[in-house]
Image 1 (tube, rainbow, N blue to C red):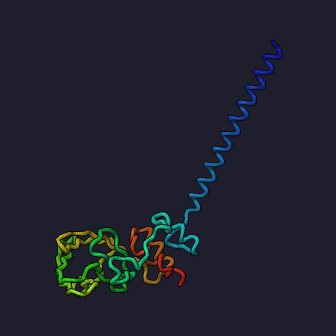
Image 2 (tube, rainbow, N blue to C red):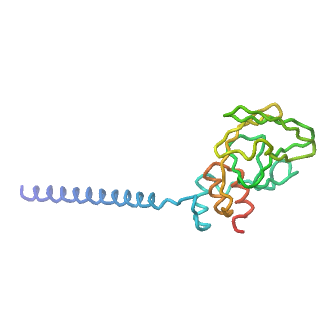
Image 3 (tube, one colour):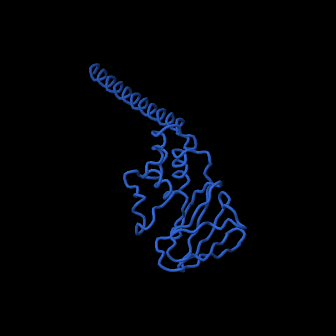
Length: 199
C-alpha cells in the first residue's frame, strides 16, 4: 500500500514538473515573440539593405519580382515615375518631380479622361500614336495631393488610382521600402529588380 502511494506521488510530481516545464516554455516563446514585435522595423526609417529586404518582403517576394525589361512588348522600359493606364491601384509620386502615364500599345491615337473622384473635375487628354508616355497635366491641376483618388478612362475601360507621396530627399533604399509598404508594387519592383537601391 505504501509502495503504491509512493509511486502515485512520484507520478503526480513528474506530471506537475512536466506541466511547469511546458508552461515555462510557452511563456518563453510568448516573451520572445513579444520582444520581436517590439523590435519591428520602421520601414520609414530603414538603415541598411537587410532591413530593407525585411520591409519589402512584407509585400513582395523578391524571388518572383518581374524584370523591369520584360514589361509589355519591350517597346519601353518602365521608369520609376510612370503609371500604367491599364492597371488600378496605388501610385507613388514625388511631389517635386513630374510623372508620366504609360501605355503598352502606341499604335493609335487615343483619348484619356482623368476624373478627380472628390471634386469630380475632369480633364481629357489626346495621346498621339507612337508615343508610349504622356505627362500628367500639371497645368491647372498640379501634382496630385497625397491620398487623392482619380479615375482614368482609356480604351473604353476605367481604372482607379490612389496617389501617395514619397519624400523627395529619400534615397532609393528608403523609397523602395516605402513603396512596398504603401502598395506601389510595380515601382518597388522596378527599384529592386534594377538594384537601384545599391546606388
